[in-house]
Image (cartoon, rainbow, N blue to C red; front, top):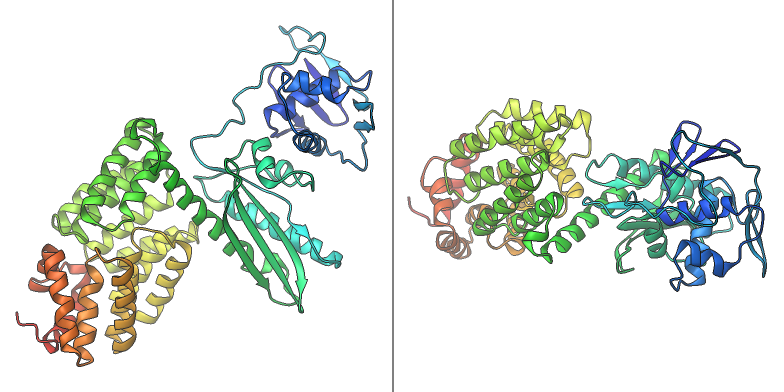
Amino acid sequence: MRYLFEDYVLDTDRRELRRGADVIGVAPQVFDLLVFLIRNRDRFVGKDELIAAVWEGRIITDSALTTRLYVTRSAIGDTGDGQRLIKTLPRKGFRFVGAVREEQRPGSTAGDGISIEPATAAHSMPDRPSIAVLAFTNISDDPHIGFVAEGIAEDVVTELAKLRWLVVVPRNSSFACKSKTADAGEFGRVLGVRYVLDGSARQLGGRTRATGQLIDTATGACICAERHDLRPNLLPSEDEIPRALAASVASAIVRAERQRAARKHPEELGAWEAYQRGMWHMSKCDAAENRLARTFFQRAVDRDPTYAPGFGALAWSHMMSASIYSEMTVAEGCCLGEPLVRKAIALDENATEARARLALGALLQGDLEGALEDAQQVLAVDGNCADAHGVKGAALVYSGRRAEGRTALQQYLKLSPHDPARPIRLTQIAVSLYLDGGYEEAASTARQTVHQYPKHPFAYRWLAASLGQLGRAGEAQAVLQTLQKNSPSSFDMYVRRRPPQYCNVEYAPMLDGLRKAGWKE
């Protein structure tokens, strides 16, 4: 059966609500509620009757009912104030008052009575994470701030929609969800999403302050809160605030997804979850954890042989085994990794992270010009690809363009605060400072990296060399002893022997610092 009203079509066979050529995404209960009201449009329907039909008599709160009515109205362009299509009469109930024309779809039977179709899984939680961005609230008296708030939320939706691993609820569904009678977690459950971003804007001391809170709808907990100040007389579309907010939200979701996957039994993991479990292990920056991560990446592609990120991560793990943990030569790691990267790209030609792995392979094999070119090509398509910024920064540092390299590496750090390659990129910043003669800054950066990632071997060399240049031989020798004890294979690959081609430029300056620290070859 198809119900036509205004420029909407409600198709009960396909369980679709359309406006013109556009499908409007609605949660199953919202769809069922609208069907029930339209089928019984000749009268007011009481609250108890509505709950019995749509919720099968389950006990729900007034807040939950209000939320679903609000979302239902919003899906068809109605409001609680206007009540153009859905009328509320105190103590009587609710009634659909719009003019409706019915069409019988060939092969279907008309629905009788008050029965409605069972809810489908169209809005069940997908394997991938999903998010709804609610309309940002203007909490000031200035109506212009309302325009700013709307612009910020729209731009955040646009930025998040660029993340192909994230399901973003369309604007017409999520922006409608705003009510003082229900919290963000409740709205998220109505929309069938795992996360909700709720925000506000206000005038504060001559500047506009935008805030956002990321809510886990399963627990109602706030897992990320951000606050940004907009520069005076600058529209949000012209500012970096939406991009920064979206980047913070994406990072928080990835962190939460990895924690969620870590709590599940391996046999329960889907492809996305197995991939995140692998990334969780890899982020521990330890050789054994990297090997364990590889088993989860393999599980991801076994679960879904078309899952491109799993193949890209497998490739990355092999490259890490070679370049960081010295479990094989760099040439061997790249030989294992490159076919997997190309498999990922064949499965998904738009997989920018996989293409960034190609740039990484070129870097590790000493093709700095090729690595830079490959990274630039990725960034031309996706300016927020952290991996590409990281490879670009490293290639620039090793090519002698160290200030430019630091800028790119800082952009990587900003975009990906929990990436497994973070200690590598931090160390490369230390390298660039060291090569520029900034030994104190290099030592500080390397020391912070060692403190944050004590099992990662790279920064130890540069901390020791910087201390040697600063005349602090005793401290430098202690650092070297720790490195030799914890990572003898890395010490052998990068200090005792000629290092891989990509970092040849740093070898002689590093040895100079280590010799001043008292190290003897």
